[in-house]
Length: 186
Image 1 (cartoon, rainbow, N blue to C red):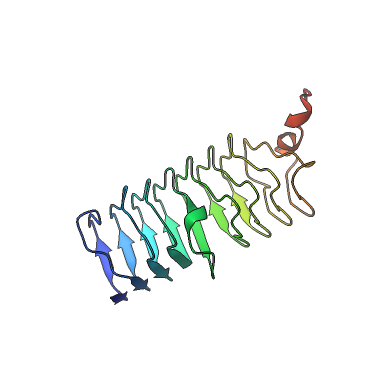
Image 2 (cartoon, rainbow, N blue to C red):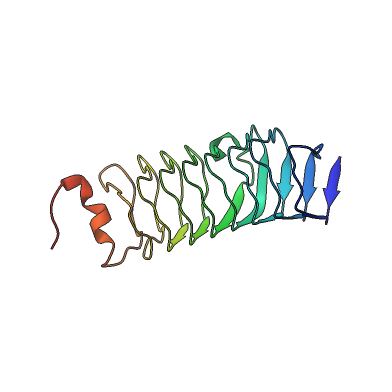
């Protein structure tokens, strides 16, 4: 079953039968908390002010999907289908989410809470972290080439174990690259 060009408002998807594919659909003020989203494809969809905390993705596909003002606590995006994977996050709370080993080039995170998010071994080439809180986020063996961190804050990125070639930082947040040295900057 495919749903196209539909708008859903204030729906609780824990109580609804899900389609196999959603094309150009908009979800506003909907609840997906703890919902099993196995093998569902979302193409050019928008999620606005939705609660998707602890959803189980299990090979679901997100192709050009926008999440705006959404709650995505603990979501394991690394379980999603990597084929044509692309999403944008604006004003979202992704605390404890995981992008482990995902290739998410050109991803935009704008005004997001990314505390304790796992980016281990992810490929984030040319992504943007605009005004994002990266407190306790994990970057290990990650490809951060040409990533824009110039307005990000509270990050701790070790340049010795991550590729930060041509990444952008500001004078105000450069200390996030030196924390592993355990030095004091005055």
